[in-house]
Amino acid sequence: MQLPNRARPALAALAVTLLMLPGLAPAAPASAPAPEFSLPARSGGDVSLSSLRGQVVLVNFWATWCGPCRKEMPLLEQIYQRYKGLGFTLLAVNVEEDSGGADQWLRDTPVSFPVLFDRDNRVSKLYQVTAMPSTVIIDRKGQVRFIHYGYTPGTENEYQDQVRSLIREKS
Image (cartoon, rainbow, N blue to C red):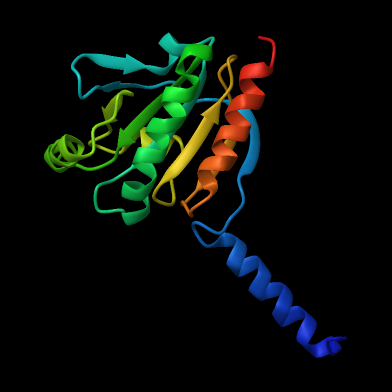
């Protein structure tokens, strides 16, 4: 079916709008140095990104009030368990001012990867987080390689494909 010429601009505008919605936007390939940060960890002490140089790092920005974040967390644990022995780590960065809710939620949904607290949103601003959850995948050289905004079922498969490809890359 051929669209009339007058309908084409409206259809193009709709397509662009849909791509901009969180959860519907494809992963944005990137290649820029990952901004350095150090945040307090749930387990105590601080974790800095620079201490993980040489590993593939998935940084997931999340909040307890975010339904998709809560659905995604057990899937992130599976990815972490599968690849942690291959030079991969995962950092879950909670962006809530009060980390008490995150502590409580994680008691019911335990994870083994580091959970960090960005109570003043300093790091989420550095990474220009505009949707919850937002996921950044960083290569062994400290370069941001993939960015995902939002989560829909199946996105975890993209994470795994991208993590595997970065693990295979030579440093």
